[in-house]
Image (cartoon, rainbow, N blue to C red; front, side):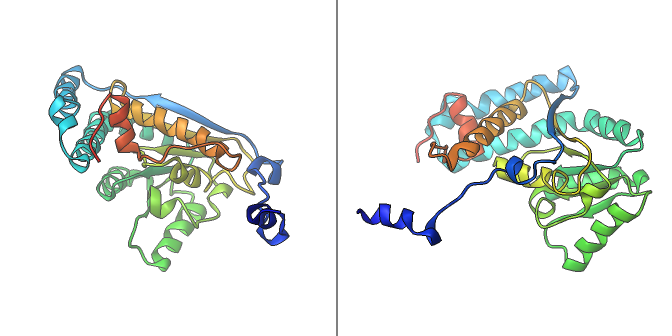
Length: 253
């Protein structure tokens, strides 16, 4: 018997995969909705100029980190293009009376969203907060009926927090992380034991920008991730590099 076969046959080394659907058979469905937001045509003209420069031959000949930084900047520009209509969408949603779990990637965006939504008595979670501060924010969102929204950094607020599912079934992403794992963990603050309603994940995008590349890549990565433990291969490049490759850019390592 080979060493690998021996190890696989040892009960202590067996990996038994149980999907979330198998473990939590009564969990309601999770729905993903991509929400295209309106942007001004004049602003898009300037964006396209920036995009052409980012995906130019000069970028292809440059260093990988510099090229990735250009894509990251494009994503920030895409956020700026959609910010006004995105805030209107969020306010319209909150006027329905439902609570919303709202995620962003950058600390500066989290702060802008929190300050802009003061009328809805928001709670706030971001990296660097103490355990007590996180717990106070968690309790405020769950226990205070006037707190209609909690604004959180995807990394800081997407893990290790329970109870949101008792009062909320809607999550929205103003920005996107570089891996579907962060999004799944963030969505699972709501899609977990104790949730009685369908969970809807809203991805707020600026049409015609790299936002759309990001959404398509994250969706494809999520499907690939499902197959990793089934012996299928998955991509090892990050989101920024993959956006470049989708645009035909082969950046030297």
